[in-house]
Length: 221
Ligand SMILES: O=C[C@H](O)[C@H](O)[C@H](O)COP(=O)(O)O
Image (cartoon, rainbow, N blue to C red; front, side, top):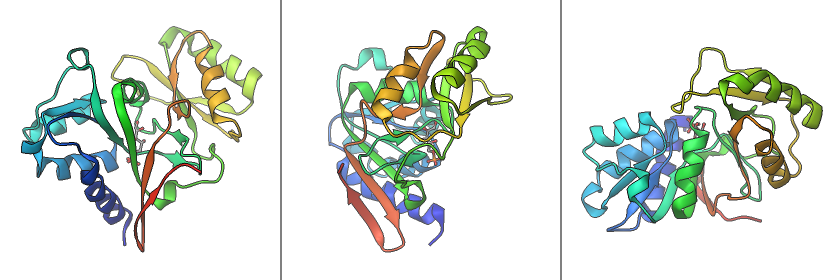
């Protein structure tokens, strides 16, 4: 099976977690796009969705799915999104597409987090995928120096990329993230950091992992 076929399988499996008559949170990226296309088939059963990026909002609207402003939504039943890496505790690295901050905000309002990804995203220890950090533009050099001082690794500016919030991304290469919760907290304490791509303090509740043998439903170890 191709990677896209695996993504489609997990997107289909995620439909089971969509709670009828509620508003749901929708992530960003190629796997989330497959999910949006599946969601379109049952759009009449939900009230609507909150999008974690402009791209996702456009795709949802393109399918005629009502998109709500998060400020008018107090509660979401579920947040469904992909990931760049998932460890056995279901801590994630996200933000390969640069949507990490809005993803984290939308997730914060949702009751349950269902992560969907193909099995190439499963790792024992996070950090092989460069960890994205969204920074206020004027702080980028300072934040990069602080990262090297505190954690090592090599922060690299994502060239030519601006987030939906008008900020920049530093991708930290060469980290071995043994304590994801501690690193998430400490990175966020650096002045100028908006947020980082570790979803550890709030992690996935369920990981629907696409494998050649079917969709595996994983809960945290
Ligand atoms: O900013 C992007 C998101 O965090 C995505 O969920 C993540 O990069 C995974 O994307 P994909 O499903 O395209 O591999």
